[in-house]
Image (cartoon, rainbow, N blue to C red; front, side, top):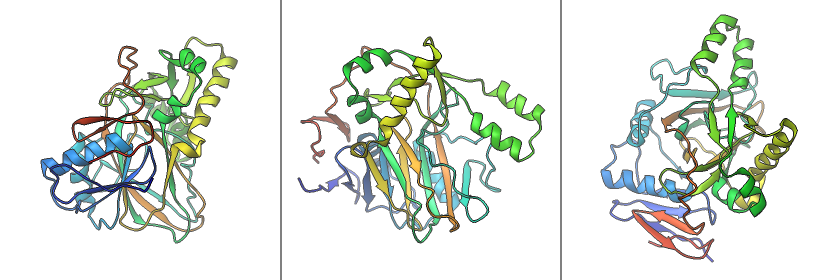
Length: 315
């Protein structure tokens, strides 16, 4: 089947071009430096729900315009541990170079150590390396759907602990005091999130544990739980569940942290890779055993299309 271009209903010039059969689509026909109409905002959100991550090219926008675009989709978080933008605290600068190698090369969903983790992240490329520095995204619906039934029965309804231990290590390296770190631990206690999350908008189930922040499954023997977590982490590495995005200057990726995980490939050292991220605040994850939409349901523009698994979404 050839790739399809989908013209978003009611949106002015937006075209959504899927990049794989389940995850990733490129959106064109819009300038994100301008204020969004309600129709354009709704079309982008619908594409995000359908494809889990959407990409925009040639968006030469300012940091202020980046923040304004992100606010169309909810309130923005201020990251408590990482260095902040001097003018826009909602912006997380992410710069790697010869002195600061990339370190996000592990599958994860952003800020799952929060009680109410991110709805989505919007990453803007300011300076891309000439070669390398791609980001991979994995469809965690497909990862769940591909599990054996026996594993699904074992993990449905289970909860796991998440922790920001990696950030504590970085803070110690930067010289943050033990007292300050202890205050962060009290302010951000380890949350319990479902191993399988029900998406609050699509109703679909996805794996919601990740190697960066999940530490253990509640109620399981440590050895058994650790083996099960490693098995679940590995699902993100399945190529059939992935899309890979090659960055250029002024490219933007907007991904749904409730439905996918990502991995920033650190293969460009000592070149510079300079990005800025805005993060939309989400809600508390949950598992609803009564809400079970068919795995082949696609949601787009307010309607649901029921086709066999793998078909492209129609207009």
